[in-house]
Length: 153
Image (tube, rainbow, N blue to C red; front, side, top):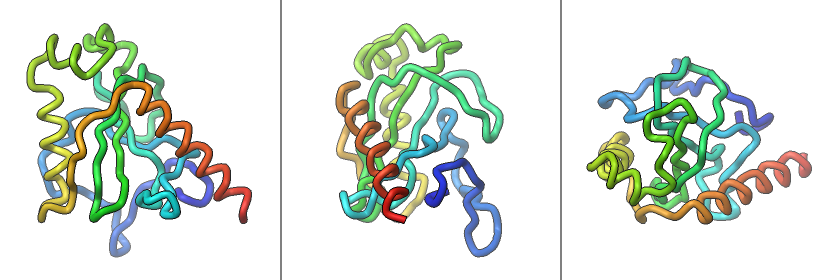
């Protein structure tokens, strides 16, 4: 929720939003109390994250190791996806996208292909992957943007 930073179901035309595409390539969600604000060329939504590892229950809060960011544009707005490895995942020994690809060939291509196509019609464009430092910077900026938005109300 953009107002309080908590996890809530998205609704579209009065109904819970459900994707009409193949299943997510991991556990996809948002990071509470973050915001990619429109003022900073974001999409106005909380920061998205994909957890790679065993399935999580809908709404479950989890912790993981942040390794990269998939830099995406949604109709020109920043819509980055942080990529994290769950601590109980066989992938957890990887520290970078390169290492992940070396140990599990094709995984990053799957993520990039999925996220650039799930909305259809060429709405999503990839600007490649950013390293862990860039992922951390984006996370910190999104946290600051949320706090700024809340303090202005």
